[in-house]
Length: 190
Image (tube, rainbow, N blue to C red; front, side):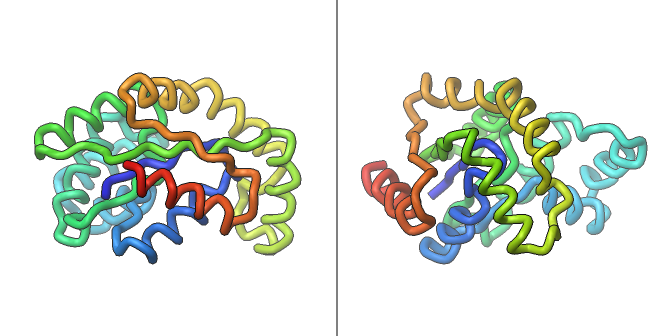
């Protein structure tokens, strides 16, 4: 099972990804974690990423695709994976599709967790209280900026996958268990 979870910040992607990992024995692939691991391992692509990161620049799509390619080739990803934090743009989605095609695989499903943006403020404030502010991005001001970036860059990715027939939207406003059940229903149909 190969999945992408989409949704604005605070939609519950991380929570749902953790549950899917436990239930299906697949790995969660976080682009941030993959970048740090590639740099730490000193791989050729990790060295390329480090050079860019040391300048304070965003890692270009081709380097990210190379890092994802290295990661999905590892044995633990053979049963499947959930991409977390990628793709964030339509060009990244297109590059991901090309990468997977070279391996004779495709995404099984792209699940968009939809939420009422007005409720996200409450959700983020609640998460900040529960974690003691452990996440620096759990502020209302940061949330507004992250939602604006999501609308501009990532929301069009949903349209891209909708056009390919791989997108399913799930209402993310219910309890964790309700959202998990809706995702399970989508995956059963897929």
